[in-house]
Length: 64
Length: 382
Image (cartoon, each protein chain N blue to C red):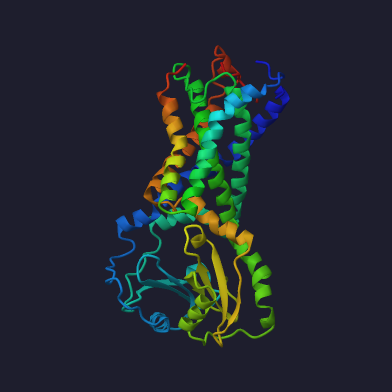
């Protein structure tokens, strides 16, 4: 492993793209139910499910 | 990222995690039943049987309700009056003195339409034990502040974990769990996956929990800051007796803020009020503003409005930290999601602990495992 090599931005984006999407969805989920009932609750439930969906997806994915 | 940088972040992650894991595990485990506090209390019948009267049944005067409540507690003074949201029930807290300690306070609920007392709330049950353990570990304010400090340490562990995610996952696709590799590699992948997907939720719950631990200092600062400004003309006057009608006091407050509803009233001398006022705390009528309180100070002797002012930003932050920490603002589905994310956090903690405990037993034949040893060097993803 070469830790001294600077990671290129494309590689960093590839590493963090999915986590950033999940982070964004989680924040939307955390806020949605706080600002609106009804649709806000539904948005919150769907958006905050993103981390759990990702885990299930990762678990079902074929291990390398 | 240089090797030294990664090493530094690794040290931060290791020690902040080690210091806080035991407390974090306790908080996650006790937090799990607390998410369903309301449902568990209902299932156990803790709230007692109560059949709500038909809709539209007229409510009684609050002054009469207070008289009934105080008649049941001779020698005590009223401290707080609060209102249930979904049923015509009022709750009266009394105590021997306005500055009574929590353990000396008495809480009773009454049907607002008949003035009948509801079955008393049992004290000291298992949920109370769990709640006290979660909030202050039976150590009062020092326990709360200690847990608040632990929250900051946990947040440092989260941030350092995110930084370290990059070198670990450099050559791995997102979500990969190498189950065919050693147990240590498999749990490393689970730790990384569960850790990174729960970052937002865990950060919010951790930071709001830390803010919640500061509730007493925040309220004390609000008293010294805003409340003192609002009641400056009363400075130096002897404490007033609560002579004015509580019903009229509430009407006066609502007239000053017509689109709000009363959440609770603090009587003269208690922490949320002054020596001379009823503090009528009102909430908005939207999902967001119902968490934000606006106090109206009503002169306890004359019943006149002294001042009305929204709570300052630091108190609003405290008020919003409650729902964002406990996840009780989006119905049962949100509570279930909260519980699942809490379980995910427990797995992150447990797997992190396992990776640290098993560091010396790792076989050197596996290049990933070998570099996850005691020294804070990191393994490249393969």
